[in-house]
Image 1 (tube, one colour):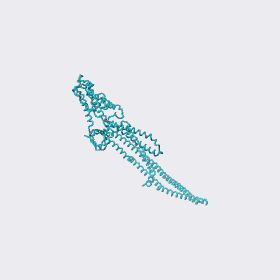
Image 2 (cartoon, rainbow, N blue to C red):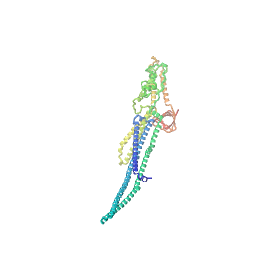
Image 3 (cartoon, rainbow, N blue to C red):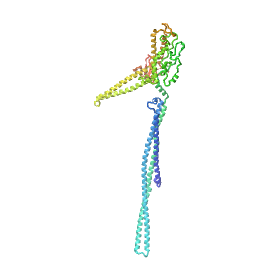
Image 4 (cartoon, rainbow, N blue to C red):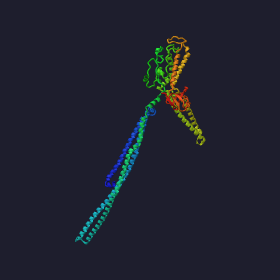
Length: 604
């Protein structure tokens, strides 16, 4: 079935139908354009949204991205940004593959339809022109035949008229014959025109117009097929990017599953861990022993009830508690001393005090020790307010100091490696210039080589400097150094008291002179004080497990020890996150070794 056969007489219907099809294409193109605008606006709003919530450089949020929940949120923002890119890609592909292509194809269809309709109009005009000629010849034949009939009747009437002359009769017959001849010619012309018209009419209705209608049918079917492809592209365009959109959504899901609350807690610990120990228990002060103390002279600073950690934290919420509080500077409370050493046992109740003190010797000793601790505590206390950045990071707690020193060493090592590579490249270039002078002057490279050598020397000096600081920080730690300082101060003070004790007159607690040969109870006090320090140090370095060496380690740098494969060592201090573990041999030698070189088994 085709239009030329079944719709041969429906020219107007075909004209309207093809025009309606083209209008549908235009409408669909307009629809897709508006869809692309929606996609572009959606993508733009998504990008603005992700940009709004992305942290700015150097802000607090960017620094917190080391935590998995913060990093996952950034991953979600990145995935949504990629998702917006896919929406833009959908809009672009729809515009290129549907709107532009269909618009171009629509113009071609309009020109083709115009051509076919023009051909149909020409054929119709030609048929109408032939019909007019036929009608004209028909009317002429009718008119001439009527005139010929009148001329014949007049000739017959003249011939029967007795009054008519022979000349009149002959004239009338000639006129009738002439009219009859003209009428015959008109008849023949009419017959020829009729035959021509019938032929053209048959050509018009059975050949020309069916061919044009079929062409219009083919054009309309191609238009429908192209439009159907546009319909399919409307969905395929989005379906093609669905895998990428799915990956974006999978990335969002993965970002959610990557959140690890335990690792975030560990990261917070690693970032802010100071390395100090917690305050120990407060010792019982036995006032029943009869030791004379005053409110300004007590061995532990104040006579009031010591405030607990929660009270201190309540007043200093924005400041660290133990070593960083103002309490440690104003009055040496027991909590400020317990992280550093165990308080010595109380002095014996019997026996006169040393003439050196004139009051409780233990109180005087602790006050003297506290004087040596104050500068350190004060320097750490300033961290809570306005930290002063030191080159060796001494303003930081021990753990953070080791990490910063290690990071600084890594940065210097990378910079040094760059300088070494540049030096090697310059030497090779100089060698090439010396062998081929036409390529360049070797002397022109001397300034660069000298500058590189200076940079390398400077970086090596900094490397050695930071290595020594790291060795110092990793070998003992600030806490251990302060304890050793306290112990040495106590021992030196005891030695000084023993050496100079005879130069002072002994006093009894009530202010009377004691006998010159009376024993000094401070000996026992300092002996206990010394024993407490030794016990504290022993507790600090007590093994917490064992480790077996998997590789040889030369231990060339300061603070490390050598290690042979298969050797069993005692673990004294765990790896604090810097890659080093403190161990001890059976002979008492201690030092640091790489954690990755040993297999560690800790005691439960």
